[in-house]
Amino acid sequence: MRHGKKINHLGRTDSHRKAMLANMASSLILHKRITTTLAKAKALRVYVEPILTKAKNDTTHSRRTVFSYLQDKETVTILFREVAEKIANRPGGYTRIIKMENRLGDNAEMALIELVDYNTVYGKEAAKTEKKATRRRGGSAAKGKAAAAPKAETAAEVAVEEPKAEAAPEVKETPEAPAANEENAEKGE
Image 1 (cartoon, rainbow, N blue to C red):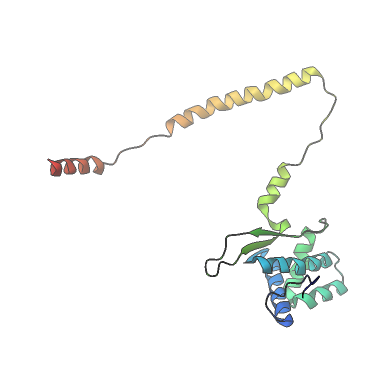
Image 2 (cartoon, helix red, strand yellow; image 1 turned 60 degrees about the vertical axis):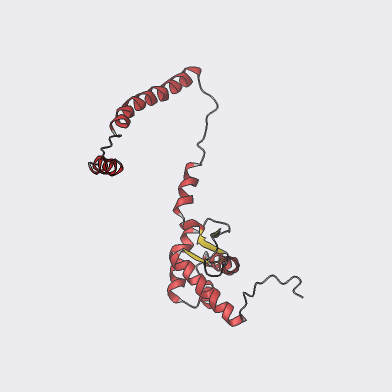
């Protein structure tokens, strides 16, 4: 029985699994995102997140420890130079797993695993949602001026945009279509 055993062996021997996870972790660090099966992505997250945490402390000992897991000098260099700077303020959760459609060949569950700080799509949304400091004291005259100004701007913008929208829908019919209709009419008569 496998009670309490949390590691997913992925149907491989110990040495094969360690080599595969090291290669996948290196690819993730180099390319910032990889596509793999869901089970491998979950196993990779458990494998790579402690390595990323270790990379935040740039010492000889931590470099040697990370190298013992990854077995690739270039990857270790990129990890400590580029990736460690981006994840310095993050307390954890360096990777994101996004489920994808099943693979066509064997219907395996596929997933995209990526480094969170390198995704520009979610980074832009986070910047927009930041709240500005609001002031509680304000005169009623200031509120009236602020409310009137945006309404005037929007009305001007709408007036400018309307002529552009009317000029766009011009569609010309091709001369072939009427000729084809005439030929069909002659055959039918």
